[in-house]
Image (cartoon, rainbow over all chains, first blue to last red; front, side, top):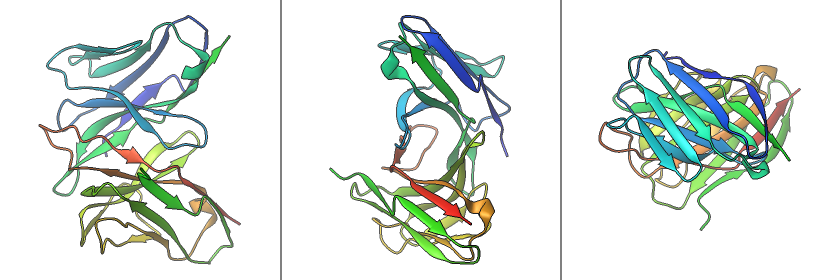
Length: 114
Length: 117
C-alpha cells in the first residue's frame, strides 16, 4: 500500500500569515496530486490539484508546489484567513484492481487565529 | 442539487448488531466509494465501485459489504458491528474513473458518525 506522509499534523497561523503543509510519497501511479479541504461536520471537498507538467499551480491564495526528484509536494496558503481554518488532506493515485484510487495523507488541522 | 446524500447522520450500535449505511447520488456518477475517517488516520478506502454491478475492495474492507445494483445507490453494510468500527464514514462519487489523462474529482457526502458500544 502506497504511503503518503503528510506534515505537520496540526498548524496554528496568525491571520495574514503563510500556511505551509507538506506531503511526501513513495511511489505514485502517475503525477496527479490533489488537495482536499474539510470543514467540521462536512465531507472533504477538492481545493486544488496539480498534474505536474508544471512544478507549481496557483489558484487565488492557494499554491501547490511539486518537487518530482524529492517525491514531495506542498500546499501554500498565502494571507491566511480565519475562514481557512479546516483540515487539509493531500492525496496521490495508486493502482487498484484495474483502476486507480487515491491514497490520502493523514490530514493537517489548520487553525488561523485573528 | 442534492449531490451525495448519506443517511443516517448519526448511529449508535451495540457490538454484534448489523446495519446499513445509505449513500445516494443524483449526479449520474459512474464511480462511488466508501471511506472511513479516524483521528490521526486520515481517510482510508473501504470499498469502491466503478459502475453498477461492479465492486472491489479498498484498503480496509474487513467487516464491511457493499453492492451496487443501481448507478445512484451504494450502501455499506456492517455485518456484525465491533467497537473498532467506531468511525465517521464518508461516501464519495466522481463522474468518471480517475485515469492518467483525467482528474475526476471526488464529491463527498457529509458523513455518518457511527459509535459501536
